[in-house]
Length: 385
Ligand SMILES: CC(C)(COP(=O)(O)OP(=O)(O)OC[C@H]1O[C@@H](n2cnc3c(N)ncnc32)[C@H](O)[C@@H]1OP(=O)(O)O)[C@@H](O)C(=O)NCCC(=O)NCCS
Image (tube, rainbow, N blue to C red; front, side):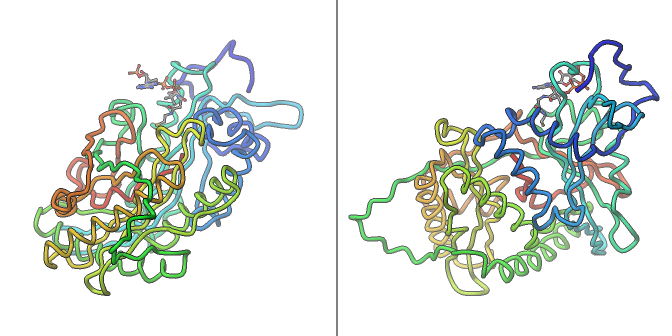
């Protein structure tokens, strides 16, 4: 990636935030494979990253790759240094003002922030992020789809991104251990596994409808703007297509159970999940079954009924985790109601407050300060890696 002598200063006007060429892109993936692709060979990781540009949410330029480099473009006979790199993924987003006005727009999720070891500690990632924040305010936005905010999940604590404009938000999760199935014990579970993708469209539409009502209520009650990434079908499919690629590479098969549902429409309790492999199957610590959405269609239902639904769904997730070589099931930033129901359900769990990994961080592009924004559903995270 070029010589490290005579490197420009991070404040040099000769630096620019731009996009990698088609030959630079695989070089970036090869360089960061050890960070985010440990479960895959380098070849499979590069193939996955390429595949990820073609799937729902990311296709049609939803995914943008960014580099900080010198102004001169590469030619066939020369290369330019990739001083730092990252990517952004466009997502549907909502913002509701305290008066109840709903704005439908977009948000960008930033990920894979990376500086090659030989360029580290020189301010390049900071310079890239300082330029990227304002750039994303207008990136792919138009009057019908304004850019509302950008988000990222920091694995390097709260300070680095806060200094560059992304405020850290609550970052906690519920953790459940995997449980191996005991076929000799008959199950009286009424929860049903969600098999395949067929029911996802209806579930996601319901989820979005519920989210809108929650945002309006929260904004009115708190007097603050309530914002959220929309839990759209494409958002969920993005995770599942990615999961299929990775499970296929590791296990030579893909999972069929994508979540579980309990109860009847209007009062259903349901969850959708995704398996994330960080160390492969040799090193399963860290492999996580992420519950992407845990939805109570009617929070006012009988508490015992809800607690039972939560328990049965978690139990299905725990069995899936055991079957798929996963070390824990996680639910990010559960609401108070869900937390109370988990406590009541009798299922074994831990509540973990994170201060270093996957710190939910947001830059708000509307009026007022980022710190004044109420970020709802931030469990709908961008599990990229
Ligand atoms: C994190 C990373 C992108 C920083 O790149 P860089 O070009 O060296 O960054 P800068 O020189 O602009 O800034 C370095 C700052 O990041 C901080 N930093 C770097 N790694 C860190 C870590 N693991 N934990 C906490 N802070 C870290 C440094 O302490 C320094 O802080 P300072 O500005 O207060 O001195 C680079 O170390 C890297 O690629 N790491 C591996 C991938 C990774 O962890 N990416 C972040 C994913 S959220």
